[in-house]
Length: 425
Image (cartoon, rainbow, N blue to C red; front, side, top):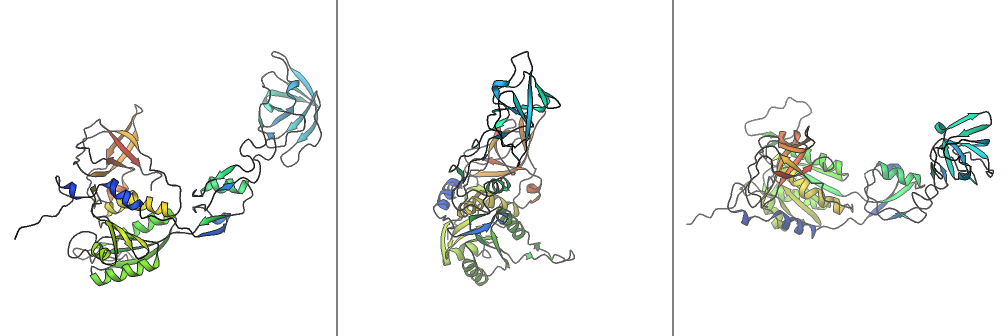
């Protein structure tokens, strides 16, 4: 009987049997639906939530023409000629919330504070540092241009102008913007619900103390903590289903429970081809498989499909592969389903300071440290050995070095694509 060899992550010549990353991303995009349910929350509960629909300004911002600096409000016609000074009579004061209500005449000035309403007839503010006040008279120098230091009504936003688009992630600046417009609440999309579980007889749950002893072959269940932490940062509702043993029935049971409990299911481990790996087989039995073997490293055994009404991701068991596949596939999918305005992760070029091993036909995500040298050049080095089980390669890194499938090798000094963790994770 002929031996049939299966493609593996160590193959250098059989990557054609694996699905290209770009194709997998397109298949994934076709399966994504935005959660349509919304809820109205008080503004102080909206941080990290996704705005449900476009919002327009109910007013002009600023609502009135006001002083941009402390000084004296005057008529531009009263500014002195070059090389001369001008003395004006101070006839009142205008403070933020307590405007001067008269009309300014020629030869007059109003002492004014930043943010205070500009008096009728005035159009220029001379800052305090460019004046001399003596009694009720102020002397102006010749170093102020007409119209300076004034913020005009509506110069930031006009009434009815678009403020925030639906899909905007509400962060501190957006919360402040809404508060400045008088919005006490906002309509946001309901939280996406994501079920998480790990598979593997070798996994030992964390105890309340640090005295748990590992038997030969056992490891602590770290992937589930990593996944839950990444999901919590994303702002979804996490359903933690714990650790599932390497049993076909147990895997089937947790699949059915997860599909009933959540919009998305994310597992780690069990997505490969051994007799103890039941995730991909169970997905095929209970749902539909979009893909499960990709031309990428780390992360080749990434299962994706649908089970029940839920989107499913079966991530690898190695810790680094879990994080790489989450950030490259799961994260953008969840952002889309949350209704967020999704942008491609920031990627830029950096000079690689060392040669890198790379095989044709697969995308590689090596962990790197990007920095700016004394010469002002952006450079990157790896964190060292790149095994998918070396979680320290992630904790030491601040970026992914993204090596495309058509690249055969990297020499020291070559430019490579860098995807910084800041903003991604």
